[in-house]
Length: 597
Image (cartoon, rainbow, N blue to C red):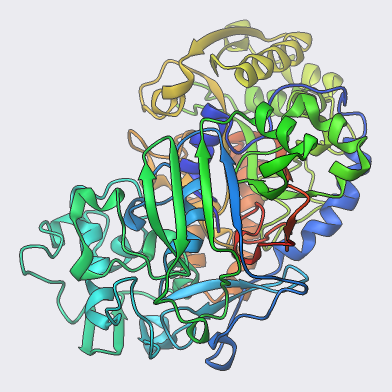
């Protein structure tokens, strides 16, 4: 999903460093209502944790179901604090560009969401969600008729092949790598160093396009999650005729309902209708408004003030990935007009205090810290109940397999931490091991998190040495294997609704290297065995294996102390219709918006 990594690491990296996705700052809400509100919120989030279903040709046929009351015309203003990370689909792995990608680009499959938040995977460029064979090692997709790019060129299997092969080129470095590594291994670039631009292609035994309408993927093991993988924005089609390689970022070729009319990088982006988009081929998207006017450099504080005031063009405005600025949350809640213009819900991210296992080798130390940390205090700094909820484990409420009652450290009953239990565990720990080096980002949220963690751990007898790290390079620094820190706050969210996109990237022993998301440096044979087993199973069976992996990690390894689940709370103008919280994006559902007048 959005993700993410939109749902994954890169999104969280940017979100935490720049404050673009996670609510930061403090508010009048001190977190006291978090436990009460979380019960209602988690009940609402349960629909987001349902397993995704795969849709047949009938469900993949457009047009998309009409949004009640929708009208055509007008331009929606979109506020965003930072410029977009990328516009080249192959580079897209974060929520900001992912939102825009929904308007511009199509891929083989796409996530489809109903009015109740149930999510399925439908065919987008393909006629359905894909046909597996050979036990799931082979997947075949047939392209729809009538799909064209913005220049009127039909999309063929050659365009799909080109879109996959260009991901092997060196200039593509920031997008997802699931498909490439599944096809060609961890060192996939060696399989096609020219990225297909030199006339060389992947062998038909890996990627076959026997005719203009057929695409066949061949893997060395079952890949049951492939339809969800291909629904990621990073796997959208790049028509071969319009590919300008590194320059594609500036003016990509659209296949969705909108196209780029003007792109002033980091300042503004204007989208207008794509006349060659055919709604009869699209079961997900709409083309109600005439265009979108993205304005960058608008802080969350300014966005919130403008949208609360709801005057002039602000009536036609939305927030893209930003949310209500934390210090103004109560202003929105206590304003009936503004409050009814909000969308809110769980994001897929779980924030943890992650241990460097190369340095914090005593399990008792990790256990004591996990009991001691004060989630209530940390959540207060994120905006209270509207910014987050206590996390008792590593799986977010949006994830299939989430266990609301799985709370081995009693976080839900004692969100402020269990000081007595932590002190008891520390009795047999040598004094030298009670000194812990905490890395924290030199940003406003980083400072607040440092204070909350220091306060909690000092109470139980730890000597916390806090080390400031530049916020812009925070994840780069803690991502070094030889980093000088014992622990650091990190976050992660699923790339699509599967625990495999949480457990594998951050706890797989083969992922321990500089720049990896395995920040705890876990190398556990049982964990690796469970990961390998789950990745070859069908979703129902895999869910049991992922559950076993989480329990083993949290109770026997303890690579991180779960802290809180993040939430999103966004505001839009009074003239914006169709606004709802998207289970797929964990943001406002940009696919269905219109202007009321």
